Length: 223
Figure: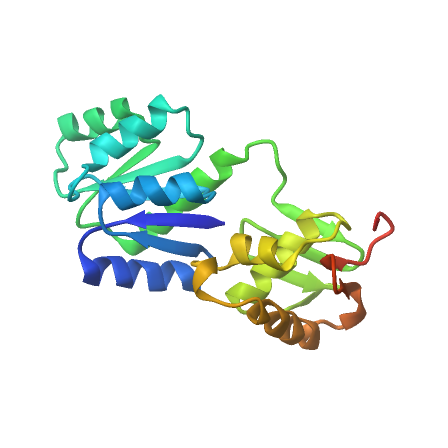
């Protein structure tokens, strides 16, 4: 799941981003409201952590702009002001949830998981093809009932391939879906991560590749 973190305090932003990446999120960072709107206009994100007090454009302005554009992203707003009136204002602007600073990291994760479920209410969290099974809600992958110890990037690739249901997924698509900043890494990173993923699978042949098309999971529906 791709997430944009908009926070102008560098230490807090970097610490949150590192922690969220360990949880399996693909995280990009914006330091001000203008950069946030630019990144949201250029890439697809599922979740937005939005500090209310930002340089250039405030978090309020960013939130209101996105909702005026009918942007579907789920927004968790952060603020140092935690009064009831502040929370009401943030929610009225279009935020889906509101978390006052300071906050417990465990609570932040719980709220993000809840927003993630709300963003795809009709989609099952279980992905299953052949003997491979993923529980997206718990970030757990298994093959033939045996847990797979995958890195966040390996898990992200496997999840993306399973969602394609036997269809081909290109290098560039995997970069966009799995990596935090696709423009900062080369296409060879996908090949290297596919290689380590195959080594951890009980049957590595289930991940097929083709020079032009990219990668897919071998299924009866493969096309």
